[in-house]
Image (cartoon, rainbow, N blue to C red; front, side, top):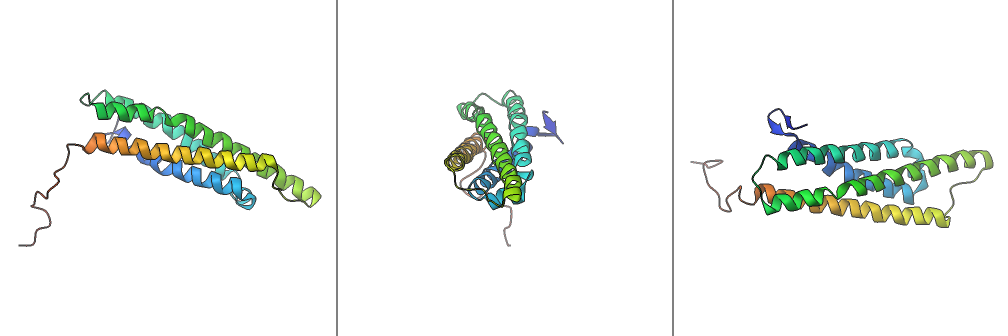
Length: 170
């Protein structure tokens, strides 16, 4: 995918990543630390993480196309390098979302048959800590990538002083 309605697809697709990664990260942490949330979300958690994971390489590929169609620039190269590092974070979000979903589902089924609830086992605590670490890493990485992309796109694209002509009351 290269252009959408005359605009570089990357410029549009990046908005999905900027929204989905933090949303999936927040949902993962909530479900990993609160079993009731995981049971309520059900299959939505891994599906959200899967859509998030799928959006990353599509956006990255569109970014690579755009990189070939703009002037060579150190800021663009830095943005592209950072962007290449997001896929493992998104993969981690997805894998942990599947683990949390599967555990909540399994425990809900076991709890219904034995009258027990998901207890605070060392494995559950480890999954919650790992989820928090991966979610934090993913969100920080998205921020760093977005910041570098904004700098690459706008570093010479605006005036620090108002040019005038817009919104002036005569």
